[in-house]
Image 1: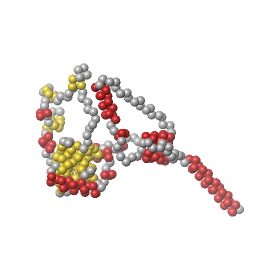
Image 2: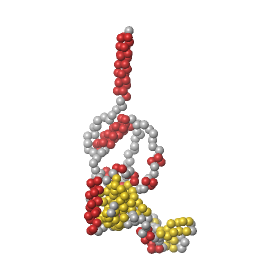
Image 3: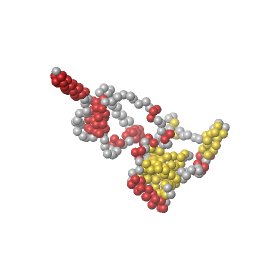
Amino acid sequence: MPRTIWSGAITFGLVTVPIAVLSATENHSIQFHQYHLADMGRVRTRKVCELEDREITQSEISKGYELSKTQVIAISDAELSELPLPTAKAIEIVAFVPLNSIDPIRIGDGYYLQPAQPVAAKPYKLLVKALGRSSKVAIAKYAWSGRERLGLLRIRDDVIVLHAMRWPDEVRDPAVVDPPHEKVSEEEIEGALALMESMSRDDLDGPEFEDSYTDALAKIIQSKREDKPLPEAPEPEQPGKVLDLMAALTESVQQAKASRGEDADVHELPKKQTAKKQTAKKTAAKKTTKRTATRRSRSA
């Protein structure tokens, strides 16, 4: 059972739902510590006061805001928890919007919200049902870790999930990136769409979505533990130079289908219509010439 990260309440209108916040995700990656190679002694970070030149305990440490090099304003955790904000103790819903109206770049980590008291069960269930039926998500404000934040509330299997959100001014303008100005043909776009279709699926289950890095790292640790040779790294594929984009798309579609056990034979991707267009132009020109000759003979 994950520990409670924060306690408070969800508020929308005059409805209050006492909740506890639990982390919705887990980190399964292998963690390392730092060691002194000479004797494998653990290397640790110690907190030292630069004025007294001595190590101090956590109870002696507080936050501070530096006004100048000689003046610092101390701020305690208790003072931060008592900020004069309505969101200091509550997740205050301020609006309901369609999920597709939010740029995913603004959505961050997720947390599960559970009813904190028996009395919270009914209003919690009410919000779950209302959000589910509305097909919308709630946008809320809350204060954690010394700052007010923006959040998104949605439903996952009858549980309310809170996603941290970035404020609009925290997202950089895409103008910082200089996009390529190359032109692509309609045939190349159709080829890319065909490749996307061959790679489409309805879920994210399967070995291709497993953490291969952690598995490989575990094998290295096991080999060193048993004093065995390290597993050999596979030879990386050398990317070829793309000379014909359409040919590369066609081959990619074949490989995608083959990897999924489907028939690798695919219909040819759209080809350039240059020849047809030229034929059409010649036919139109012939018709125009014929009409002109007919008009002239009539005039004569």
